[in-house]
Image 1 (cartoon, rainbow, N blue to C red):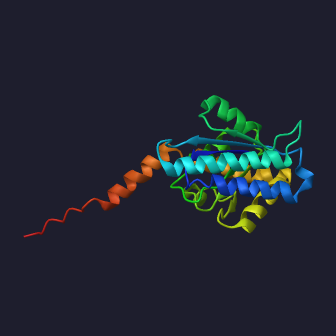
Image 2: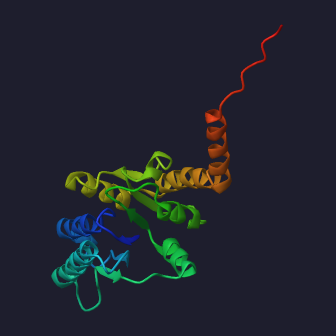
Image 3: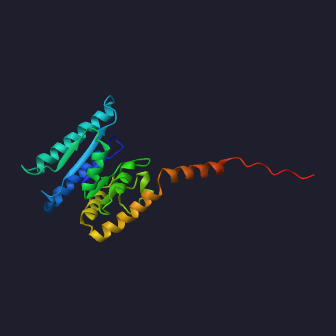
Amino acid sequence: IVSVSRTDYTKGNVELLQAYERLIERRKDLRGKVRLMHVSVSANRNMTAYEEVQTEIEQLAGRINSRFGTFDWQPVSLIGTAIPFRDLVAYYRAADLAWITPLADGLNLVAKEFCASRTDGDGTLVLSEFAGVAVELSEAVLTNPFSHRSMDSAVDQALDMDEAERRDRMAALRRKVAAYDIRAWAAEQRRMFDLCAPRRAAPVEG
């Protein structure tokens, strides 16, 4: 499982790690088989709120590894520095599942990056319904990060999904990502501006 976000209280990092801990706790069949690579890059180390979030993330990751880890299996790999984009794409392609569940997000390009990178046509995306891109990427497994039940059922559904369904969903996701690129966005903005432009009054005849 791969998850990439900033260390920000709106990004749901703590809620995701708590859900992952519950996953390993209730599903003994996954112990030793699943690993979460959680990339959480600091947004601003000079702000107390971000420092508190970072501390909680580190404590949660440490607790999970301490509770369930073995000599040959570490459940969580926590990365706190930016990863070169080329390497990040390699991680996207190696993962079975991307888990992107912010509490609030205007768009979230990480979800689109994951889909665009999956040239193999496989992989599953678990996505917060509160990410702006969820409106577009409706074939993802959508979840409510404020709800334990919703988060738990979403990750179970994603991990247990058969290959045919995974590929059908990913094909639809990749079509949307390819269609709604920067050119499509710019065209839509121009269209909206044109609708807002004041219309000239027709000349009054004699």
